[in-house]
Length: 418
Ligand code: HAM
Image (cartoon, rainbow, N blue to C red; front, side):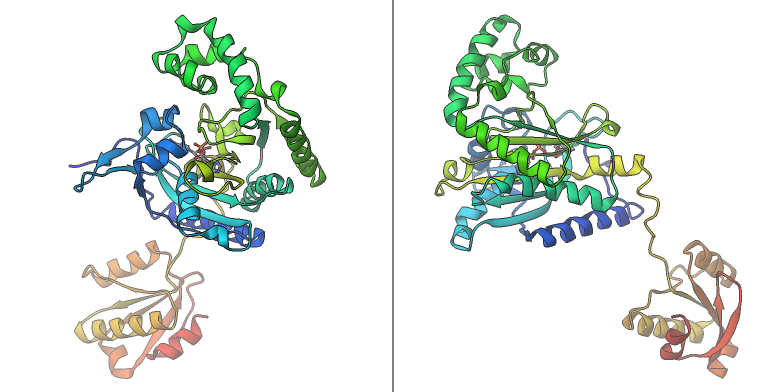
């Protein structure tokens, strides 16, 4: 027997209603905030992520599913959505539309990580990206969209953590301070962080190695080294959040694991997730579009991990009230003629929008009724020779056991089960 690859999950029919509810909530919230759906390819040119996400990140250095296709091109399964959306924004000249361009996506992502609770190799994200929003209020709009989504689903107990990681100007000065700090601990750093020290010392802060992250705990914080413009942007963002009554924690330790971020970064966490406590991560990326060959364009967005969201929803019992689909009527049949009539009626009822069901396993009549019960059908009907001759049958209400005669036309059955 061949099993599913490590770090992947089957989403079974019993869980599908929960996924559908989440997806519907995402679409509804995005619609009210004016975000429109975009779908991009599952795989992209590897260079997109090397340049977009950054070649000193864990994602690019260790976690990408990269392969050569039959044409000799280097292809990568998307580890996230932001770089793909920035590419699409440039390639399809979406900047020519009235700005900002507000997009959302529901996608699968691929990262070769060590699987554990809340960490998969194939996972799903609901994300949004806002390109070309130059006003300071954009950051608060993006954050409040995420919070509105959780609220719509009834999820509680989440914490919003906000930080600023500055712009290229203040980041450069900060990187120098950081380098000096980490040089004091150089011999203890992991091999990857040795290279990061010169190229991109901020990456050491989110290194997954225990020793590196322990050293990083006492490292100088970006928030204490922001330039006046970045400081003002952070203050304004917090003021907008205050104005709509959003609670947040300023967490100077957030640096995010991807290179494109500038200024505002944020994470939404839950105590119910264990070690992988972040359900939503996002931030600004004012340099990304230009890095990928477009004109300088401001950008900000977030992504929510749907498997982690489902873990939270299940632990809060929010998967309980979702109704599973069930047949409106089950038509059982004994004999060839009755079987053909059952088939015709089921077909006609389905065309009328009715969830009609019949047996497809040649069951005995007793087993057909047992099956109708298992499916939790609202009504049932048994067709035999008499019913075919008289063109009438008993329509049984499965909840209260009552029944009434109806003629064997889809219209009459339909009317009586509404
Ligand atoms: P990220 O923090 O890498 O950011 O991922 C966002 C969310 O995806 C995480 O908070 C987590 O819930 C989920 N996630 C990440 N990796 C895994 C995994 N291996 N297994 C299960 N869930 C996972 C991004 O992807 C950015 N593109 C977010 C963004 C959008 N920033 C700006 N715009």
